[in-house]
Length: 261
Image (tube, rainbow, N blue to C red; front, side, top):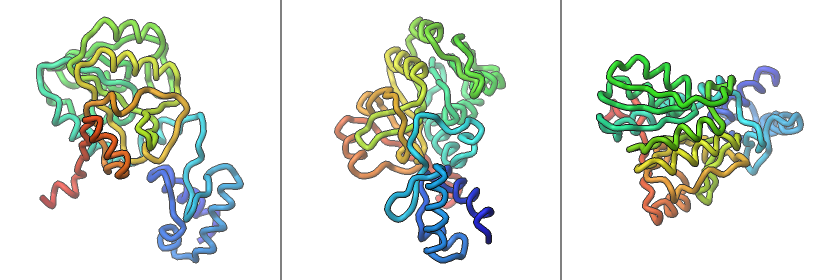
């Protein structure tokens, strides 16, 4: 297999998992470790990956991955997270769902919930929940971010502050090892602050890739979150911090796992 064929697939694996290792790639492609090391070095020289011990990661930066690409990353994991999150949401309550592919997955799992009031700054969430006739949907308004259908800015924050939510559900772009929740867009961070301030119960939905990435803007600490929904438990040091903060970690089971039970 030529390099030109391997490179896009290596990048796809890195986007999906956040990191690739030399040993796994060599086995995956059926080539030598030395060949994969050359591939990773070439991709690093081109600015597509960053070399780390034993492999490579997506480059740290200040710009998020494209929205359609983010939708494809770990889709099964996001569905597992969404099912676990939706199972914790009772009927007859008021919730907020913000921007993100994971919150959209949660919306899809709420299609059959009854008597919900859902406020959102996510046009995609609104369109998904329009299918649920037992759900009242309120869209905040604000400046439209065309890349992902998100609404942001002062108008959005002011609208959110008119409510008191039973549950506020947010996503993020990254989670630091110290428990800081991070994002790329400062205006979106301001919206998340408003959601957390106006929610009685706070949920974060974040798949495993968020533990391997970084972003420049801080939303909050996991200490301020009641429940973290993810598909693979975080590393032991962060899990211990969450236990000390009384932040519950809920790991969603994928369908293959559920079928075995």
